[in-house]
Image (cartoon, rainbow, N blue to C red; front, side, top):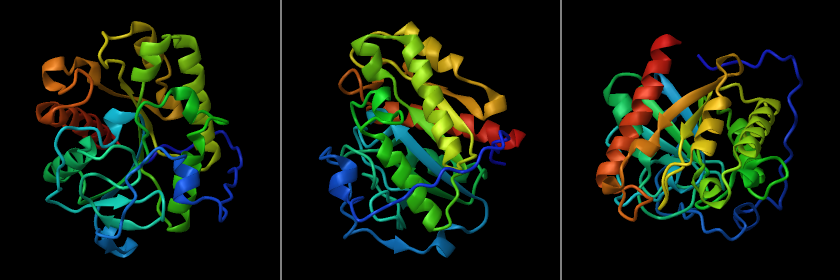
Length: 273
């Protein structure tokens, strides 16, 4: 079951306007947004049986940066940040940057094959190369988070899991672990204020053409607090460069390993819930 905020705080309203277009929300970053050739599906069709609604944000290894695109074989769907509609999922997923393969299309099939869920709805909004400060309230990417949450709410979609995969940009730049942890706690607090009670899974992620950065890794571990619904995600730094086609982004073998890691984490969580 989703974690519920027990702080007693009121839900902070998110107001959308005519200015929340693709161009303004994306800030010219080039997210995948062309849904004209995609197959739309209704909310009723998506929510059949046990359905996971997964919000994924952060940077490129949680976006469409994998070497090979993948088309799910099971009941996997894609919630599009930019128009608030659902589509049959295929790589590259609508809503996040880059134009190749996404780890979560593979992970969704794995979760369904294991019998953990009957359907999976993916809502990816990640931006390649983004720093954590950009996602913090006041940052240039935070509006993406707000728009995704509000557009899902308007469609009566409640996120059941939130996945954070980011750290590589901060690790290369300065590795300020205290600032990283503070930013992530602010993001968590904002998500709760917006009424999302789902558990937030924080991946260990710092490797991108550089060795693991222990200051950022320690910060990613330090924010984990099950009482607040902040849980440990997979340690993707353990995926070696032989599984990364450019010493950063995942080759086909790396995508499978990454997907298996998320599948294990989410399966274990659901088994305990």
